[in-house]
Length: 423
Ligand SMILES: *Cc1c(COP(=O)(O)O)cnc(C)c1O
Image (cartoon, rainbow, N blue to C red):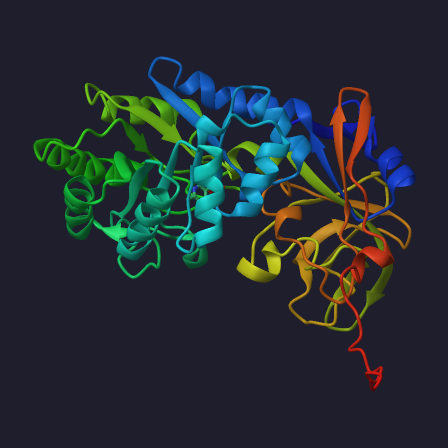
């Protein structure tokens, strides 16, 4: 459920007409609804209110500091995958004791940064990484909280690019090998504290079963570890709950919660969740202007000012995003591809879509663009990245300025050809 929709013929974000935002801020522009963000965060909290839990919002889904602040204000922790994301979390006032650090390729400087800031734990993804964390923590005279990300070998039945828990995946460690790592950590690595088990099987998962299959496997591991005298306090279930882009019907967090609570009864652990998409996905739209329309014998095109550099998901995964006219007209409909200005045939936002017969100068709203939208955007074709706006009731705030032309070349310099002066 979200707070975008028509009032009469005009499309609104909460109490603000999108037409007003595009007039004042230009396009393309990402628009987020703070009421939706809070509602989705609270739905997670409510789903697990009966058990010890920690929600660590996954920053990579939408990393704007204003968005992070909204969650920090609700008591959220954060799941980070880089030193850059830790920097953002700190800027947003995050409680470092509620930060978990995921990812297969943590660099030494990133591990050091996180240790100095005192994060809760590292979700370790390889034997060599575990050794690095131990070594760096030793040098800093610290003890690093760790969980090992196990690869439970379950198929989340989602897009292969966002499926992360299969045996052939680069993520995590197979269960058997993980047991050895835990035992090694306990016996030989003085500067790590094995305190958690972690598992994240993929993204945009629309069924409960893969989560429950993964849970069964991690529970088995947890019992084995305890029998070895390893005190596991945290069970991190990762993120991955899907949203409705088109006709998907993913479980509500409350149903996911019931299943997980049932499956972890009597386990005596604090549950950690790392939701990203399910909190921010439907809390954002991308507004774009129609530049030209082009009707051909084979296909019609609506050429807009947002492109694959702004929203990569359609090009990258063939993803569907619903598209609405910002002002409904009473004209007819056409079937068209909605494409951007980038010089790639893969630059499209929609294919063969039935849309209102819009004209040059009209505006469109690309729905469900709050997750992996701006955060995946780039400057390809030397296009300034879009502005971001947060709506709250009848007000809106620019939370990221549109990039300027000089932003685009910041840090670049020509090779100096000046000759050195002879002494
Ligand atoms: C991306 C990611 C998440 C968030 O996934 P969503 O599908 O957006 O909920 C959580 N944990 C890890 C380790 C991730 O890589």
